[in-house]
Each structure stands twice: as structure tokens, then as C-alpha cells.
Length: 220
Image 1 (tube, rainbow, N blue to C red):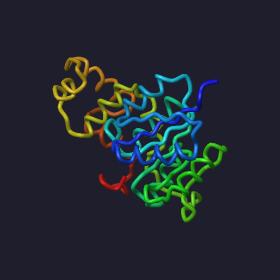
Image 2 (cartoon, rainbow, N blue to C red):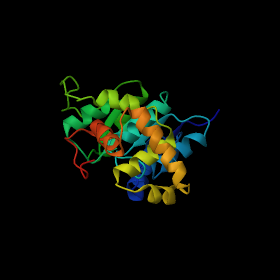
Image 3 (cartoon, rainbow, N blue to C red):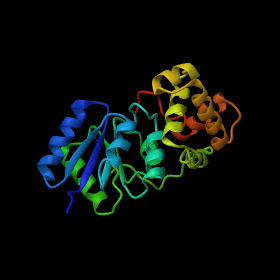
């Protein structure tokens, strides 16, 4: 029987190493894989027959804000995702849970708190900090519908959209992806169609709705 497998997705190697040590000492039966980008997460999933859990940082290459969470929940709905983030803002925690996370663990949590939260998720429960209520209503300003539309993008289209959010031109995106400008233009056209917008700027604004105005670039 194959060992259960977790993927630790964070762009900081030191944090990945620390979390691996914590998990290995408490759950030696679990196989641990690492990913530093959203691409590496999908590669790690494809490389194994079964992934039991993804531990995801919200801010890493290939993802911006909640886009990585939205993508993973849409593409791999059977795999629970636990967000581990530097943010402790209740609104961000509630938004992550509303978008399909099974748990949210602040990076300031102790090893014991992290393990307790992960055990709760593995038992089929939701895990959030004790002082955060999920019952507080929030205004999504169309964010839920945008999240649904984002979930229809292919992995490559998601990469292109994230680069559009960074302000890159088509030729810069083509260089980074190793494809032609014509291919990038085709991806952009498909993105506009799927997001039901008419311009690159509108696509970026639409994608930003998922994050909400409450999230500053360095807060996640």
C-alpha cells in the first residue's frame, strides 16, 4: 500500500524544512513532498498516485493572493488544502475558507497548534484559529462568481493571467514561458472570453476581486 503523501507548498526553503521536521517527527508514516511554485505543486500531484493534503502558502511564484487556492480547489477537488500564511487577519482567513480551504494556520502558530489543525483537517473537520469566527458575513463584490470563472482557466492560462497582473507584455510572457507571442495572444483571448471581459486591464481587475481590497501585497 502506498504511503499517504502531503505536499508542502511554500517558496521559502527554510519554512519548508521546518515544517517537514515537525511533520516527520509526528507523522513518520507520511511521505512529504516539497514545492516552491504553483507549477511544482501540480508536478508533485502528477508524480504520485495519491496526494492526501496540500499545505499552501498564499504568496508564491505562479500564484497571487487566492488565485492558487482557487485553481487547486477547482482542478483537484478531492485533495484538501490547508493554507499556511503570515497573515492573521480574520477577513483573509474567512475568505480563504469561503474559497474552499479546509484549514488556515498562521505561520506564527506553534508546532503543537499546527499539528492539531492538520489532524483536525485529516479527520474531516475545518481548522481555523480559535479566535476567528466563520459566521461573520462578508461582501464579496462578485468575488465568488469571479472565483468560479477563474477555476475554468487551464494551468497555462492561469500562469499567463498571473503575469498580466505583474504588468508583463506579451513578448515578456512568451520569453518566460518559452512559447511564441502568438501563443500568448491566444491564451489572452481565451482568458478574456472565460472571464467575460473585453480587455487585459479588465481581466486583471476581475482577478483582483478574488483577493479583495483588504489584502495588501505583503500581507499574505
